[in-house]
Image (cartoon, rainbow, N blue to C red):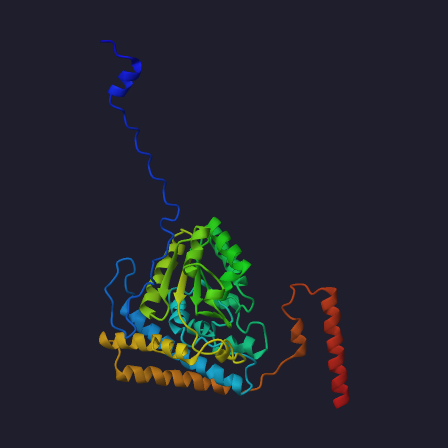
Length: 388
């Protein structure tokens, strides 16, 4: 019997083509955890340890507690100074102590900090003179401290502009062979700005050692997060730039420091930027000029009060027997003395030279600036003659 070619093909077993290998996942290593990293319950009891986020040394956590307590007392004193007319404005960071102090403790002294206007507590935790920190909010100078000496950029009032500055500085440090890391404090509202996009994108492309630390305190002044973004969380914004990201419970001091330690180590190792989103809450108004009752209710604020980061860490350290009543009282006394010294120094009226307005504007003053300076000088001289 003759078999046709068609029948022969049907009768022979068909060879299977080799399976096409799955395309690599472009988001591998970039995605944040589905839930914020948390190492302590809200009552301070520990959760199971995590090999990906080892707990910081207990000595570091005790120091974190100390700086958080002092930072909160400083914050309360600065708020009081606005009511006394000693400050023009003050944006409180009460409730965000774990983020404010954790960002500083994750860095070396020769690293750089790029703060917003809300980071006064972080700057004092970094060891900067509190009067110099408050000089901007007092209205005396745009910056009261020497940024180069303390490796801390001036506090930034425009949203997100420091994201670009940090990327440039970090890239420059890396280009010169130094392992300096720049940490950028930003709020949730800043992630809606173009400077955030430009800074993170530049840092990613050129592998600049920057940690973008987003404190998501739920409101950009009065605008809730739901009106700013449809992203699952702000941490996912890093994926689009090719930046590994993570989210953390911002009121869990242990988790905050553990996550930031990993982010800083990533950047220092030459692997490029890292984005961390901390879920936290601003307990006080946006500034002393804000009426928070117009956009959030007291029940919401009270619910977050139960997640207090200082109480949480204190409970944990007491259970570890590295903190007791005597130590708590000693730290509280230190905080009160710190506030008293600040109050005393801020009650001294500063001597202001009007001609200082023209200093540090340009390295070489422009003709227009020289002309304006001389006009002011002449007006001051005329006033002195009238008073004589």
